[in-house]
Length: 234
Image (cartoon, rainbow, N blue to C red; front, top):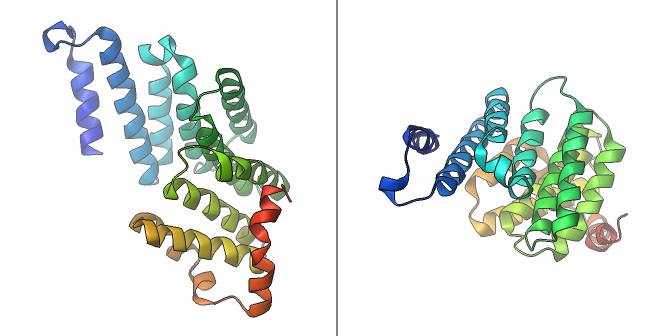
């Protein structure tokens, strides 16, 4: 947070970028990036209203006005994440933002779009879960699994985020069957292997009882079919 705030202060303090041998466009990019990074830091600290305020600030920057197709998919994912932590937020707004990201990705066909859509769909699913709309949450998560397996640049952190969201969906429905345990154990395994200490601690805090119970032989058999079922959208 300190580095993010310092970066934003520096960018906002420069009236003429020429002595620093950078263009105005580059300075605008730096400012928007610093504001968005600060918004993410607020979200990680669970200060959701502050995160939303910074996202709104980022949307007003010259960089975003100049190149909305680049910035909006990243920024709108952060907005959906912030909304999910605010009581009585508008699910319609979250849906509209996700639809805008889909439209941008469909029209530009960038190599990073699969990863962006995976993360945006996971964020939208968490918003649906908060509204207890489990059917739509499962629908968008299942749609995201196509990107989970096929998109370029999907790393351990992105996999853990999606798996945790699936686990939360089943847990919030009170379903303690093989599906929930599979996603908890997979998310925990990947986080542990990748050294994602923060994610691993979050998983342990949220799903402690699931991690303490090992799956039975029959549950293990059911879990073996889950990846294929998910890829098929089931």
